Every structure is written in C-alpha cells, then in structure tokens.
Image (cartoon, rainbow, N blue to C red; front, side, top):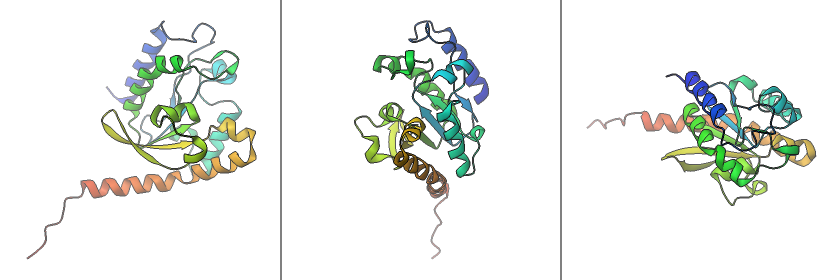
Length: 205
C-alpha cells in the first residue's frame, strides 16, 4: 500500500469512528492534506469556521499567512503536509480539550507514521505539547529539538500558530524568521544522514 492509499484508508477510518468527540456540531471532517512524500509535516491545533465549511486545514486567514510564509522559503502549500491535532471544529472556535486531543491522537500518530517526515513543525502550543510537554512556546520557538517518538528520533521545530502571528506584530516577525530557518535545518539533517549511511573508509597502510 502506498502513502496515498494509506491516508485514504485512515480518513475512512476516522469518518466511520462514531466515538470521536466534536463530530455532532461540526459540518465535516477536516483531514490533513498536502504531499504524502513531504519532508515537512505541519501540525496545527483545530479547524476553524472556514476549515469546517471546506473540509480542508488552514484555509482561513491563518492559512493564507501560512501559505505566504512557506513561499518565503520557496515552498508551495502542496509541497508540505498540513494537519491538526483535532479533526472537527470545536464550538465557537474554543481551544480543544485534553480529552478531545487524546481521542484523535491514535489517528494523528498513524498519519505521521505514514508521512514519515524529517521535520515536524508544531504550530501553536497544543501540537507542541504533544512532543514537548511542559515547555513554553515563547522560550523554544524556532529551535529544533530531537525527541524519541515511537522508537525513533524525530526533529520537532516548535513555532507560533499563524493565528497568533496575525494578532501581534512581534510574533509575526518571529513566525517568519522561524520559518526561514527550516531549509537550513533540512540541509543539516541531510548531512547527518549522509554521514550515517556512508561506509567508513579503511585506512591504507
């Protein structure tokens, strides 16, 4: 099964799961979208009004900012994979509750395993807390952290949510600067991989 087929199957599983919270008041499921082969996986918080209407993540004002910021580093929206920790819109756009995040967690984990990205960009504190609980986004935004996740090393780059950047000029500047560091982080990871896969040269006597 290729990645697209695996994601389609995962989406069907979520749609059939009647135990998931937030379903009753939501218009539709908001599944992840983008390139299944992307090296960058962006994980946000929860769908808002526009996402709920269209069934797509990050399509409102925050999504437009995300698209423009990706373009600053030479990427289109479809070059990365974009998703959320919760897949139905919470009423009145309130924050997702811990039990709601927990209910969707197995599906989020499966999605990450399918994509198998080199970098996970967490957008906002709820997705950051999935990998870096107890941290403060104001202190660690834009700084890559390697964490053990499902038995392997994963590079997490915590960033502000684009909605927060829209509310404050200082956060907007930090948001853009953090994104501009991503290409270098990818290059560094590629170099590390090369070192690991390159056979050691035997010394000639």
